Image 1 (cartoon, one colour):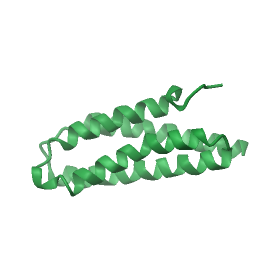
Image 2: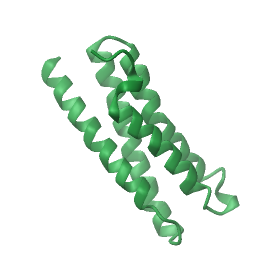
Image 3: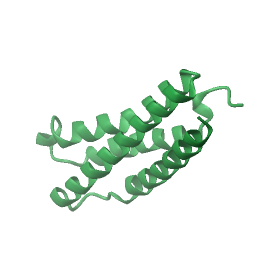
Image 4: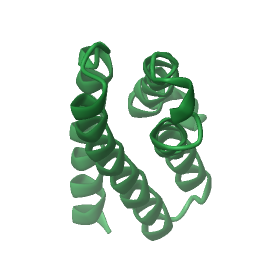
Length: 118
């Protein structure tokens, strides 16, 4: 049994994703600071935050709900990256996209396994 949400690989990867999104959005134009940049950062921060909050609930149904919210924030971020790629073509999105893909797969697997055990 894990002692903390910090031991979850999906949480660790989502923390890396947050850092990657902050680096990525720092390359956006200054006028984007309250727009897409802010939205992407909030969506990214929401992913590990909800994993952590759900893990702390110690109830599978509540944990599942927070994992689903985390998954939703991941797909929200995915959409925002698609929009950003269209607007700001000179930015390197690959590191963030690869991490996001991993996080989405891991969350999906966790949700499926927990649903089967709930």
